Image (cartoon, rainbow, N blue to C red; front, top):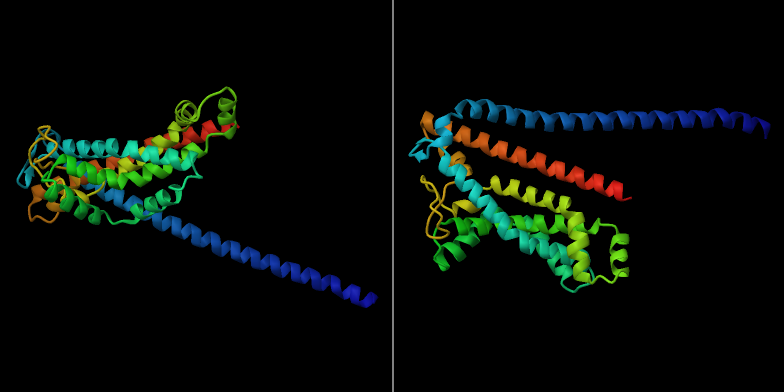
Length: 300
């Protein structure tokens, strides 16, 4: 018995050492793969940004910012204006129904419409944008007779933005402490008052994050606008229908394949402007997210 105990100690130590060695090998392999994946992702992002910035910034002249497009040359003032109009129009159209759906999903989780809304939101996220463009072309451009227009393009972007605003609004409202709701109910506040006066103000940074995310996606869309907004080399005159409108992503898509240096310069400048818009919006959304996180920590 004593011999067995004496031999069991070294065997146990050897087994523990083997397990520790295997864990270290697994950690080394795991961290190496993680570092490699991060390096590949970061390298690809830096490469893309470097190409866009070097070629786009050199092509960004005062004429590009102050003149409209003239054939394969000129400037991008019409496209810059159209991008802002379409993106803001899409957000303004998507915000009311998206926010309402988010409130319903967060506050009325027991409702019979909840699983239907979540399912439709998940499906809408996965629908290809070109399919939404086809839908907009058939329903708005052709059937409703709007033709290529700012309204048709804004509605298409609103459909794309809707699920992002809905789900981020739901998550932001759910993160409001239940104790604040209970305190409001204890003071005699009704459900609508609690939502509008307690939940929405506290969830505003999170909701703003979702809105900015949807705005960034809208700025970078091309396929749905090809079938709904069309293209125009002129400034927008304010007509919502029966008037096509320019936008930056069309300049990238169309001019980069033209055999002219002036067209390539416009494409590079448009890519630079779109990238800058998305970066600025992403930074703002990150700031809103950090503010929301800091508020949750302080509330605890």
